[in-house]
Image 1 (tube, rainbow, N blue to C red):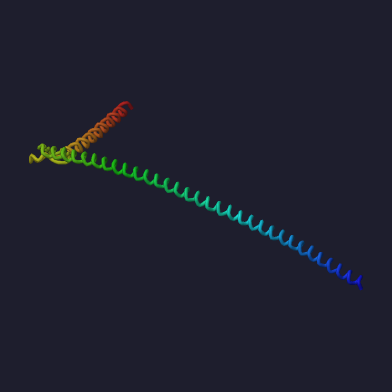
Image 2: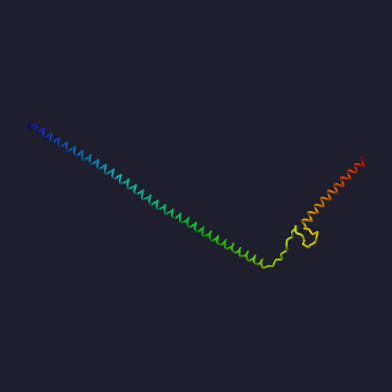
Length: 173
């Protein structure tokens, strides 16, 4: 019995040692898992921190770009306003110069209107002289009659030549 008791005590001690070993093993494994979780948590935290930093940097860069864009747009707007104002000033000067020209022309026209003009009646070749003569005719009518007379005389001369030619032919036969 003593032997059984000793074996029982030894078995109990062995069991206690084994339990302590298993407990310490479980503690170590638990500690390793806890360390692993802590490490993963820190890595995740670090990654998130870097992501936040990047996002903030991007926001700052975006704000700077927006500010640059605003400045550029302001410069363009100022340039356009300057060009428009210069154009308006130039247009105003051109309009003023044109107004002066018009006023000068009006002044010259008024000066010309003050000068008396001797008006002569234009010559109309279809009008008669108006002297009241019976055979009075216009220049156009006179030219027409002259042309008709020339044609009549030419035809008469041609007829005479033809008669002479016929007469010569009869004589020569």
